[in-house]
Amino acid sequence: MAFADNTMAIWTDYLGQNSLLEPLWDTLRLNYRDYVRSPLFPIVLTVSSYFIFCTPYLVCDIMGDRWPWVQQFKIQPSHRPTASTLLHCTGVTLYNHVFLVLPASVAQWLWRPPVDLPDQAPKLLELIAGVIGNLLLFDFQYFIWHLLHHRIHWLYVTFHAIHHKYSAPFALATQCLGGWELVTVGFWTTLNPVILKSHLLTTWAFMIMHVYVSVEDHCGYDFPWSTSRLIPFGMYGGPSKHDVHHQKPNTNFAPHFSHWDRIFGTHADFSFCNAMK
Image (cartoon, rainbow, N blue to C red; front, side, top):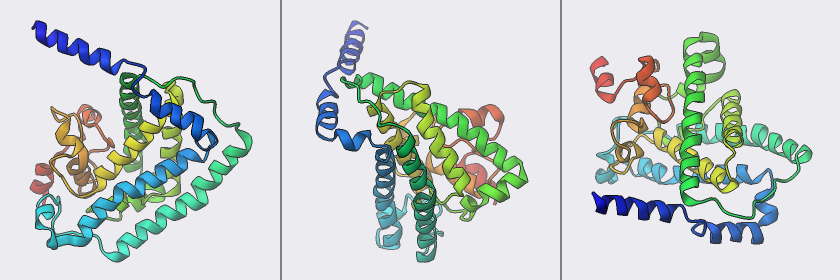
């Protein structure tokens, strides 16, 4: 017991040190100050992260049966995205960012002064807690938004139906969204770190993590290293649960975690989906 307490204390002290993230923060703050202070920086960060995270899954889809060791983890093996579906989703994503996100960012650049950069980096434990807190807050917001857009037919047809064009998700379908949904998601992603008073480094880490888990949810593969397999007790939904949502749209509304769907009775796993076929 004493050994476990000592080990926990060592890890707590280690994660609570100020110096762990300081070299990274000082490099960004001192050498790339004008870039990271720009309102355009979060857009560049998230868009580049999105296509980087999509690329490995895209390669898996293209290789198909030539990589049987990968295809064993395919959730719906008989469904693979075609060239036309990949081009459609890429086109929608680029259109939304060029004609919606970019103008909004430029407008923000004109009326909002560049952000101030704190002198110190956050503690690593603070960054981890901030990322988790932002993900949990977004999970609640999007659960309510998502539930309403499925329950109210006009909202679904007008704004959300484009995302359900494909019943077998794939990575590039992650941001195949209507403009209203993209703006809403971007608004919460930007506002939540302000609400939680997150450090800028924590904010950027949250944005990158949010992009990653969103792509993973839609990737169509349930790999052994999937986030849902790393987080115990079924607390996290992951790709298999979101795949069920695209097949049975009245289930699994939460984007990441599973507690809200369990509370509201909308939770379903992949065995439910197979039983309904």
